[in-house]
Length: 100
Image: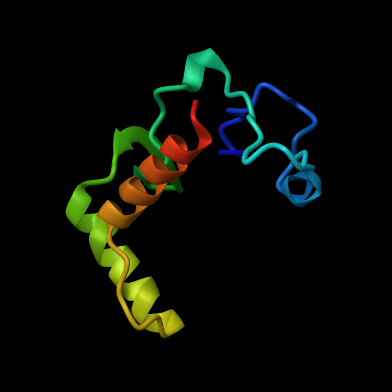
């Protein structure tokens, strides 16, 4: 997301994420995204050219994400393997609890 310059706050850096402060009464902190890139997928395909790999605007297929998540889960030693469904479910729950 940082490589695509999606945040509307130019000063926001990967290191700066850890310094963001969430007020005690809040459960979240909005980080605004530029409207021009709001529909850009986070998990995207890449294409190999003769000289380099480039990231496209095409989303990764479900089975590719699922396979990578399974591999990462096994490598890290998680007891239960995470699936893309878990990401959607967790994000929806967080959205519901936040009330926005």
